[in-house]
Image 1 (cartoon, rainbow, N blue to C red):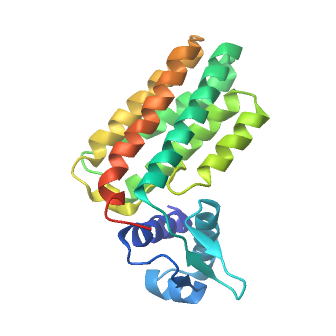
Image 2 (cartoon, rainbow, N blue to C red):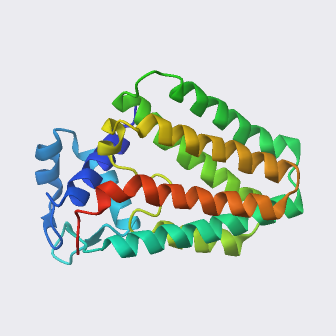
Length: 226
């Protein structure tokens, strides 16, 4: 399993819980010691957090944790849902050849295998995060719209709006597997809608999918204030 992804999930946990407070400096070596991992995955994880809008580079070196509110996170996720809904509608209306749908179906099959476990391990959860991000990227690509893809990438740069914007603490929640299973059902439904060229349905499902993200993250985000 990717050590970068593991470091990324743990750093998100620390930011969301407030253990890493807004404005706090993050030096690479200090993070290495805290997470007990090597410098390479930490460096990559910090760069990814900057892309997601959770930290910002400081002129003297390193990063600082950015402030954000629950409302900002909710709005970012809703915006992502609107844009991904548009991408799904365009994909359905334009039509997608079977060979372009095949990789998404294979991705769903891999997610099914991960969720087949009675209890999710950390490795299972990390694998789900990777596959979920892959599915969303490939679904966006089906729209064949560079403009929409660019705007979705910008939305992903907002706090916790990225499809991979999970935290490790979510894996330990009692309802985690159930919520991920619901999300997987939505993945399957939107792909069916795209395949059947049902644009309005595909768009509505992706908006609902984003709303699920707001529900599953609310309990974790609520204690964290800007």
